Length: 453
Image (cartoon, rainbow, N blue to C red; front, top):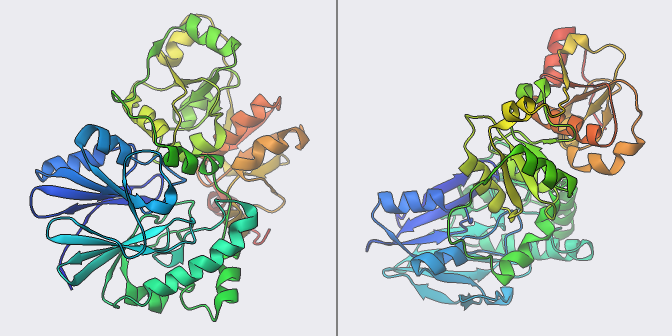
């Protein structure tokens, strides 16, 4: 086998990996890069490489592709499935097509399932296979979800995913597997999984590849599917039509208090990205709490309205460029700007604020407990008697929850504060957020967690 070793460009928040391949002549191939190209540019320039090719394995649902941006700014040649019918300049590839990269070659393998037009890319060094970019097909210990197109196509796509995985399994056992989706991805990679593998390792350890038959595979795959952010349903078409090319890096314009008040009056939503304790100590009434951290983009895309102008409130030590890039890479171009000076400016102008109480596990007595973690987390262990509502579904049922003293909890506090802010918007009062999670409650109180739903 070849020793070609792509540089992984990992987005921990989205749980995805892009790849940079040195083609050996000061040129590079980029695979599945997002519009946030900062790490791609940095990796290429550090190695003295120009980005000659950009390949997309599929029409991405979880991020805006950066391939069109590279084509416009770097003259990069875009490689993608002809069946994707992209509406911008690219080289459309079909099963078996090859592209000469200059010494290395890229062969398209049709592997539908995650999407209809999905391709895997077999990288060849001469006649020797170096590895395969499997995108959203074969993952480490899993396969990507098949329910992002339409409910009535989910099972049919799962059956195509079965065939695609078994096609890939026919490649040499020692061949490197370079997936796009990894641990933390809502496209269904198991938590804690390694980000790369080999065909042989997957044949041995991937339970989906070892399913007894196609029906068993479909059952196992569909049973593993959890919820996903609603923006996943919009981005494939956005990527097909072609994302707008950025003329400059995204930024957050400064907004004074009067402008923020005017925007709010016209329907803008305030997104407070400060840490939980800062938000709890005082925030603009009805602001939505989404603390800035690696997973900020996912929760912004899950909870914030893509059509309403968004006003950001941040602390001095938070990078405004990071906020802007995380928004843009999931297609959120509706950031109106940020409150200049943050909350100190707001309070100095005698504007209203509100607080949210933080509690420790031993302070929970008779309050109604709402656990907003994902289904699998709740099933693994929760406080007895807790009401379970995933954070992403909370807005839909907030009005039906009892308006009694309520403690909101998650695993650490960030999602719980987001939930408390949503409940506040829905008119709930006497809310508190648990600092910590169920394990902290069990350790502090000596109580036992319940399993199951």
